[in-house]
Every structure is written in structure tokens, then in C-alpha cells.
Image 1 (cartoon, rainbow, N blue to C red):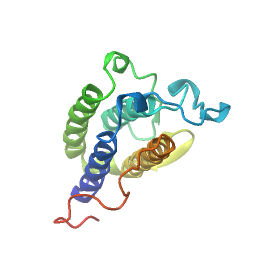
Image 2: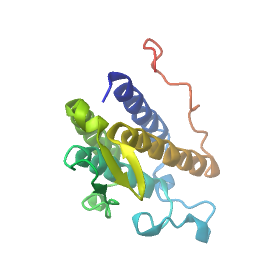
Image 3: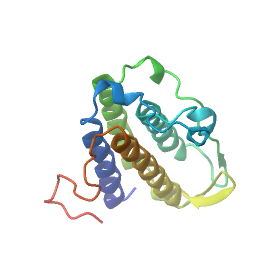
Image 4: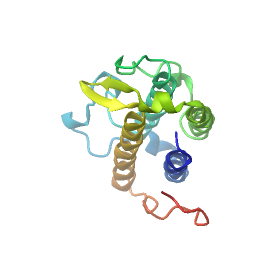
Length: 173
């Protein structure tokens, strides 16, 4: 992956850590506006910050880990349930697990070859280049970050400003 792509991905993940640092223990599992629409299938039975963070950790690791192993034209399967993450406590322990897996993801991204980034793969009946799929992973992260933001605000916590990242010395993009 290009260094620009890695910087953007890493910046997005660090931004979510800024959000999570503001949470009170009860906010990890709070469902402030419960409805049937909060069901996201078997991957997230109820939208909570805890469930969303576990989903992000699992899907990002799965997708980034798989992209290099599939041959051109292969179909990338939906990730299964986030096995092993349910034993990690909400809060500091879960954030530390995310930090660790994010470091692994950055290392895996750095190892991707130009051929891997150019090959075609299929995910949910859509065709992507490897790089296009990775951009979709970044979009997936932003989508769920928005849900975390809204859930925090519904519970009375003002989330960090989305575009005001703490790092200002580096040009993004």
C-alpha cells in the first residue's frame, strides 16, 4: 500500500482511539436509542460501541490479512464472528488489543506487493482491485466511526471533531 494510504489509515485508527479515550465504562455497552434497525446481522447483533470496536478490530485484521493470500479473481468471504475478542474487557484492554492489531495491520500493509494491489478480487458481488478493496476497508472504518460518534453523543459525550486530528506537522493525502 502507498505510504499515503497507510498514513490515512493509521490516522483514521488513531482518531478512533481519541474517541474511545472519552468513554465512561457504562458507555461501551449502552444502547441509547434502541430499535430493530440497530441490528446489523450476525456480525453485530446490537449496535454498541463495544460491539462496533470488536467488529472493526476483527474485520480490518481479517481483510488486511487475506488480501495477499487470495489469487486474482478470488472471492473474499465475509468475516465470521470476532472469535477471541469477546474475552477482552471493554475499555483500556480492548483499546490496547486494537492498538496491537493495528500495528500488525500496518506491517501487513507495508508488505503488500504492487501485484497484490493491482489484482482483481470480488467482495459481496463487487469487483475491486486490491487497492480499491483496501480503500473500501477505510470507508468501512469511517462508516462505523460515525456510528460510534452518534452513540457517544446520544449518551451525552461530545466526540472529538472529525477533521481536527492532533497531528498537524504531516501533510495528509
